[in-house]
Image 1 (cartoon, rainbow, N blue to C red):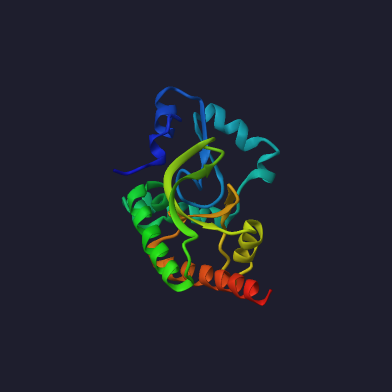
Image 2: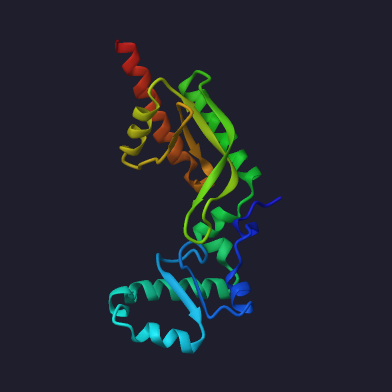
Length: 205
């Protein structure tokens, strides 16, 4: 089973155009997996006034963004979006594959750091606003229980390879939807460093 952002009830771009919308606005990053930008599709009679408006000079994107958008569209046309665009991979991946990565990492960390305060839990990935407001995807993550979760999360962010975690229910949560298999070792090393620092600090007290 594959959990996908495309199951949400928001109309697709194609559906909006087919329904006769004069203008359709959507995100170039979330929906296409490309650069941060906004895209407007519509009828010429409505597009032309936008092009001629004085605000267009302030709102238009630069050549680098256009080049990145062109490359992204070519990937979609070639049917390689899930293989080559990270955000599309993340949004399309099934939760079972994420759970397996979590279980592997939990076993490795428990063996290296000792204790039983690291567990695999079901969670929800927060997609964000814009094109998919309030929409979440089923996922799995690692929860790390600690007396000072905010401090632990801050230390993870301060690593040479920063790790961005969420603090929820007085614990640190790492959603592995955004961590591919080839980055697990780097993630494990960072968590191991911080947990061992915490143990060392307690032993000195």
